Amino acid sequence: MTVCIAAICSWLPGHLMIVGASDRMLTAGDIQFEPPQQKIWQFNQKTVALVAGDMPAQNAICSAAHARFALKPAGTVEEAASVYADAFTAFRRKRAETKYLVPCGLDANSFIDRQLDMRPEVVADLTYNLQNGVQVEAEAIVAGIDSTGPHIFVVRDPGDVYRMDAVSFAAIGSGGRNAEMQFMLSHYTRQVMHHKALLLTLTAKKRAEVSPGIGKHTDMFFIGDQGYSTISTEIVGKLAEIHQNLEARTTEIIRSADGEAEDFVNDFLRKAQAQQVERPKPSEENSDHDDGG
Image (cartoon, rainbow, N blue to C red; front, side, top):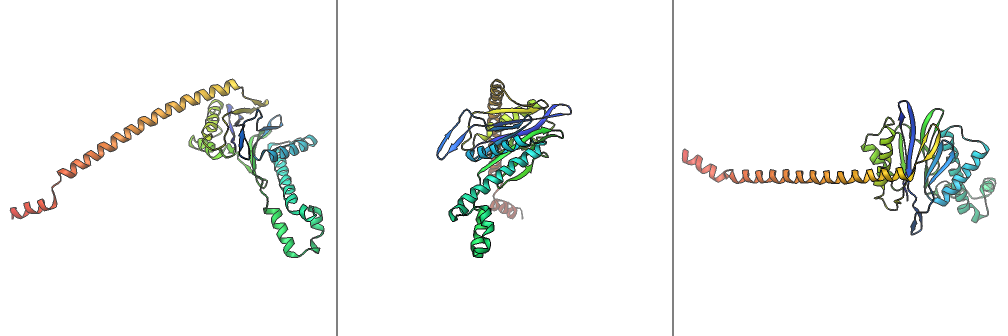
């Protein structure tokens, strides 16, 4: 249960950057706590992964991705997302093997080698379970800047990669939909300037806190031409103060609008009732007509 957000925005005309935010809430069974640990993994100077869901799984997946980058650094953001997705798939496959093959005294290689010795229905059941029997409750945003510009990818079970460059933002976790709604309502595009994008990202994170299990602490960052950098707690605190003032003014505007709507509807109903009372009854109209004849 968490929320992670990334968005492409403008720093200067013709210069794009990425801003992002996440909470710190961790859930273990029925225990929730916010340790002093960010949910942001830095893959290289200009590429990060924001992770949500099963944290032990994410630690294993991101560690495997880091080991891969140590051997061959990612040249593009897309390649970094692909490496993370491969690590995700490998972790999922290993978990499925442990659950379905190890109890049978098998591993992936021996299962392939011994399929001809097994009953077809057993092979079919094991194959189905290996492919569908395990889900990893985890997802990630891989965001960064390379020679082709800023990019945002989302990786979800079973290792599918989604490019989000066209919409220029992404949010994941249990609060992801609430956060994305703020960007949609603002008609967000990558032409939005960085100061507005920062406030909107902070606002989206705060709005996501209505979902269960979203932590109150907010980590924010940006990725520009010089690479990845965290945003100071002083700036985050000021943005939170601006957001709080905005919410207070919005609440007052809504309260005023509700009052105007109530006054209008009540006045409309009073006029409708008055007209109903003044209108002659059908029997009276017929009586007047007969007398005139």
